[in-house]
Image (cartoon, rainbow, N blue to C red; front, side, top):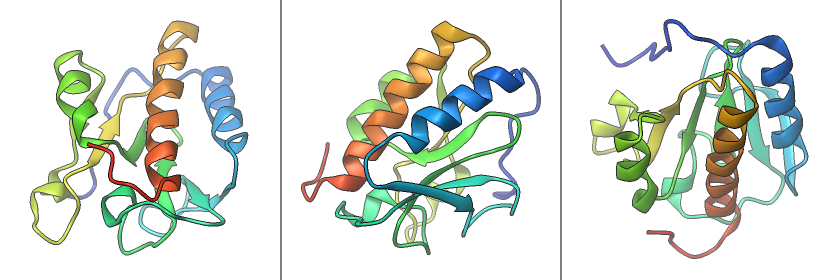
Amino acid sequence: MEIPHDQLDQFSPAHIRAALVERAQALAGVFTGPSQVSEPASLALRLREPAGPWAAFLHPSADEFGHIHRAGFLHLTVPLALIEPLQRAGWIEPHPISLRPEWPDTIVMLYAPRDEAELAVAAAVLDASWLQATSSREMT
């Protein structure tokens, strides 16, 4: 089964999730609202002027590069070069839908940060996703 693709435990405390949302909303050109591709309670991270390649977005949306779920985990796109190191380090898992040829293989679940140190890692991955979605060049 591909959807839902949820984290089952070890969620973000409310203040950590709030800090993650604040960090996402501070990224240039980002606006938030209900996700176009996920459950309505997840907070979409969308761009006013998307410039990135096809693989930088959660389709069928043309401007949503990620979303934050109520539990604090994210689904987002990350540059291909980061997927294997992040997976090896235990921070992400590829989204099963990315196995389908009509979906980018850049879609992952980033596990919910539980403390300030994990929040810093999540913010760095979020920044890489945002950079990919705002850049007109492929990020490998």
